[in-house]
Length: 331
Image (cartoon, rainbow, N blue to C red; front, side, top):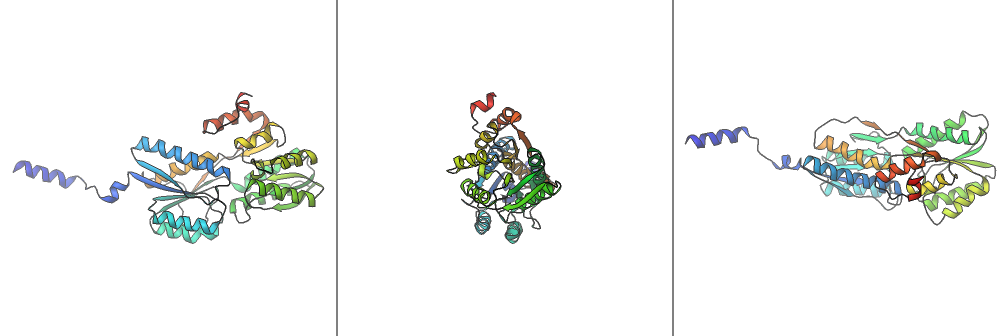
C-alpha cells in the first residue's frame, strides 16, 4: 500500500507527456525561396539542410527542411506554397518573398494557424513574421555604386540591373545605388533595368539596353544574375570586352568567379547566401524549440571580394560545401 501511495505521489509531480510536448522534439521547416532558377537559393537550401542535420544531432531532435520553392518567381505560387506548408503541418516557414506586400495576408494566416514565419533576403514588412535576416539593402546598393564610380574614374554613363521589379530588397538596392551615383556630378544615370531573374534573361536585357545607350560604360548589378553560366555567357563576356564595360555586382558564387579571375568584373559584393539557410534554421530552432526571443531584424553583412581576395573567398565557398575550381583554391 505504501509503495502504491509513493508511486502515485511521484506520478503527481511528474508532468504528463502530451502530444504538444512531444512535438517540441521534432520540427518541420518549410523553406520557400523565390525561385529554383536563381542559384543563390540553392545555396540557402544547402545551408538549411546542413544546419538542420547538425542541430538534430546536437539537440536530439528530428529537425527537417521541406523545400517548397517555385521553379520561377511567382508570388501567387508562393502564396499557395505557404498554404500548403500549413496544411502539411509545417511548424515554421523560412521565406524569401518575391512580392512582400502581396504576401502579407497569407503570412498572417499562417501565423494565426500556429505556424511561425521567418523571412530572409526579401522581407514581408508589416506582417506577423517574427524575424528577418538580410543586409541593409540601401547601403549595399550604395556600396556597389561607390565601387563602380571609383572604377570609372568618377565619370561616365551608368545603369542599374535590378531583377524583379516587385522585390522590395532589390528596389531598395537600386535606390541606394541611384543615390550613390547622385553624389558624383560627372556620373550620368541612365536608369534601372528590371528582368525575369534567370541568367539568360538578365543578359538579354543588358544587351538591349546597351544597344539603346551607346555611351553607357558602367553597370551596377544589384544581383549577379547575368554572371551565372547560361547560353548567353559568351555574349556577356564579349559585350564586356568589346565596350570595355565597368561592372560591380552583388553575389559571388563559384561560377561567377571567372569574371573576377579574368578581371572582367573587378569587384563582387558577396552575400553569405549559405547562411540564409544556417541562420534561418538556427533562429527558427531558437524560437520554436528553445523558446527564445530572437531580434526582429538580424543584419547580414555582405563581403567585398576583389581579385586579390579570390583564394580566400574560394576557400570560404569550399568550406560551405561548394565545388570550386582547384585553380582558384591554389592561387
